[in-house]
Image 1 (cartoon, rainbow, N blue to C red):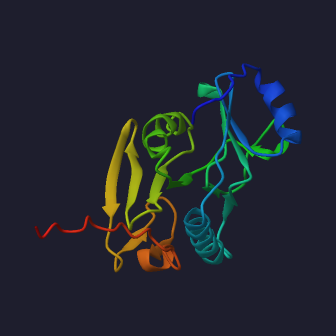
Image 2 (image 1 turned 180 degrees about the vertical axis):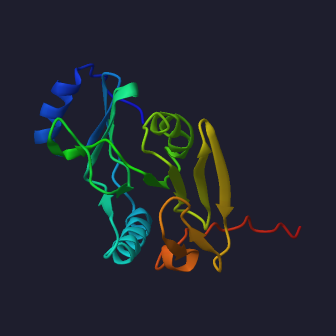
Length: 200
């Protein structure tokens, strides 16, 4: 999340630049921050989750957006690209732009080592300023581990953790359930080799 060269611009200037950019960037209070490319595990987890959601919601009034749809957070002056968003009823578009929404109910982020602290803290704090936002999932791509935050009342959130392959995750605010086995289907974790023992 570090800038090689700071660029301060207005939200309008950012949108103009983003329209012709070769890669996606976030906009945070005047700064443009390039987004790193996703890993294979990131892609597998995002694909597994979004496919299951779309199948489950085929007869329900929810819509799933993945990766390329921008979210505007007006109270923090942030444009960002959540990995997966669930919208209840109809999406609310910012300034009638169909590539920018403002009303996610559930947001899912797949964590990477470099920005997992940002997703868990600063980004979550920004998301909580969105009136429609009710539930947040953080999915680790390097091990089986999911954190689920669900809003219980104003300024109060409940945390559930999942770390066993035979567990199921049930969303609290929408009718959906997925097993960790399905969520992590085909995901290959890095093997960390132990230090060789010194027998001398």
